[in-house]
Length: 106
Picture (tube, one colour):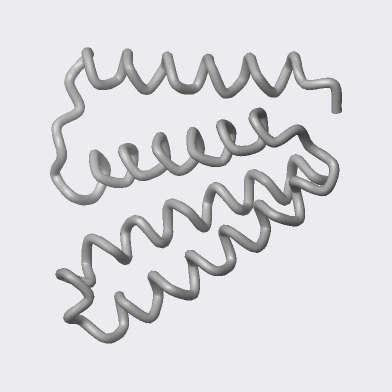
């Protein structure tokens, strides 16, 4: 169950990063509000997952999900470039996250 919670925490990280972009330096009310809600949910769920997962593994998976998810959203919806080099880098991050998950003792 800790892994499901950790993945959810990573998805909330994507949410706060997107809200941060749209908050325009915290000058827009709803995106700023979304940022704080998603951030609190993300960090809270990370803390819950850390009760049974190793810190280094959980934190790396959490940030990996957030990083990859944010890049994918940027490519799919915000017009960010999606050339082969960027996709290869995403694949490397995913390989690292998956490797840590597979070699985790929990």
